[in-house]
Length: 155
Image (cartoon, rainbow, N blue to C red; front, side, top):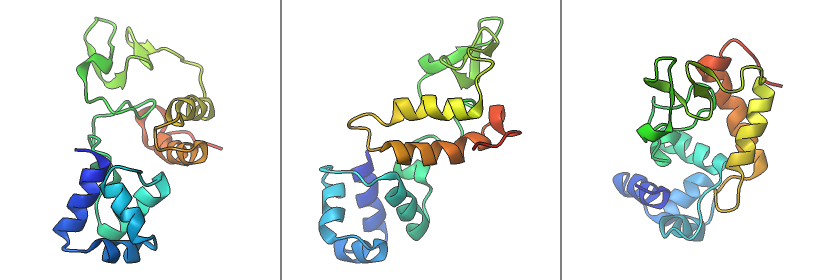
């Protein structure tokens, strides 16, 4: 389900008009209408606000799996072709193929700050719905939660 369909679903399930949803989010009714029609998408800060105000996980709005993501870069691992490999060639169920291969990290010496930069580079592309600042803020919050980085802090 797309973001526009999720936003419409959230609003409909709560029995809200577009104006009522807009009022709760401090946006215009037209903004809600454009989101629901797929003309535009809310930025990451607005997605976080929608999640908070309406009590839904951001992952649900973005239609991302809750637990199946790369524990190095955070990329959703919805497709088995994205999985890295263990030393024996079996799929590495917690890492993507860009971060983990043959039982080890593809960039073993990369720092968490460098990983943030790599991820921002891939996220903040035209049409993605993320600005560089939004992608950076998101990755700075996400990476410390992942297994690879849980013992470090990002600057």
